Picture 1 (spheres, rainbow, N blue to C red):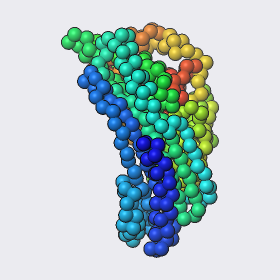
Picture 2 (picture 1 turned 135 degrees about the horizontal axis):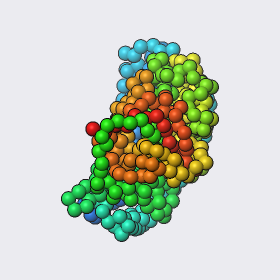
Picture 3 (picture 1 turned 30 degrees about the horizontal axis):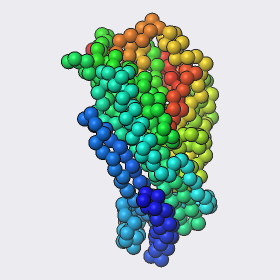
Picture 4 (picture 1 turned 135 degrees about the vertical axis):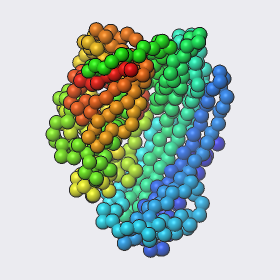
Length: 439
């Protein structure tokens, strides 16, 4: 039944897009683009000690962009019905917009179709994998209490078409594991922790996904925590899961459309110059084989390519859309970022910890967005103190402050181990000269 629904959508979405583009031109648009997306989600949900839900959800969206006299109108709707109304609303929005010479649509003429992953869910494997994960968790980590566990299969098909003749279609089928949990020990509890991974093989042992097993083991140790006294300058040993968030913050604060267009990025003049330690190479690689969270087509209709962000400490590319590139006079990037791959180092995590005099094993960082100067302050969550080369106490109420740009330059060690959760392939990273404080 689900396969029939997908085939029906596959047949109809080209007709929908063609009709919308035709109507847009007929009613006065100079150019138009249309993105038709359909999603089928099959999910199994565990909460309150039992598997409580098995369901399939359907979601369709259409996003229309029209240009009339260099004025843009955009409309999104969650139905394939009434394209005439949607086109009229987009044209009406354009009438009230200001002209912008940077506005355009994809002009890289391609007609391509990409299909990746498993298009049909294996419900039996999803269920059996969840049952096994729950059983293994109870046996190996008896203090863990799950708030929720979700296993999903997502089938997403996305068609980009425009009046320049571009037609780019991508269909991806993959699984998502997510869990939220805490540890209970008599009257003591840990703070909440979470693990998430994207994967292709439904028969994968869920315990092995991403950092899941390590996080379960560490959470059991977090029912007893220590609050630091005073302040010191030390090291952060950042886990891959946390490192993804930090690199994402670097992308947003230094490399993206907004900060480059408004001229607030500290890296605006740093292309082909050093911005990180020489041992740092970071790539946005959406075409990495086996990376379930990858993509082949950008949101603007361009074919995605792998791309170096930082290579041997040198900034190689910004993450700019077509619009951002036009506004800044810089080059459009080969992809939209994410799908992070970082070159591993030569030392094991154990060696890196052993060589750390005092610092934190940082699993999660909770803080606001950095200022335009890159200064960043927040709380270390689900983290541990490192003293004299050993991981010691679980921490609470511990603050971290530093400067994001300086932190990149102060990366001193990178582990030879990497972790993948389907969205990234990242190692553990040590950063020196960070201010750490307690009460």
